Length: 174
Image 1: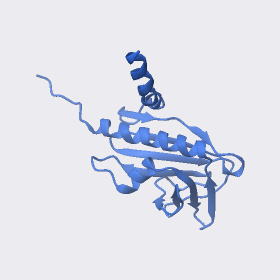
Image 2: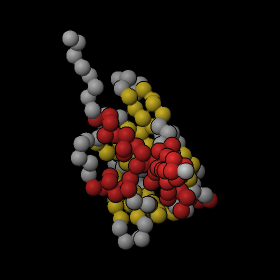
Image 3: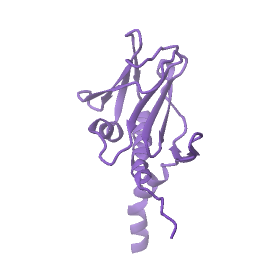
């Protein structure tokens, strides 16, 4: 009876552990390990988008694709994440190349002491994203509660995996 009670009490932790399905993708240039969540569709109507998160030993890359849009992003494009409660916000600049297909990258350097902006992005629920384009027009994407939870889990999963990739596993021959 005690064993059943312990199993049931640990079940929420086991369920969260299974949500983190990362794909091991080899970097085509240097054959290093690169972990990816793959693309996940979120939103509905005019707020549809896909998001993917990838990490290697050098960087964390959060890739947003605004579906059905011809928004142009350049080096000066920004996205403002509005967190749960609506009072706390963070602004991230575009880390990808200039494009007019609605592709937006948020890139962080993978390092031992991660910046607070990254910690907030992965640990707090995002209720909306406001993209500012090359011509300074804005596109607001509101997230439904299920997407808020899924996005937070996906980003925190990549964040947790990033620490493991920093460990140097190379050992000299003896």
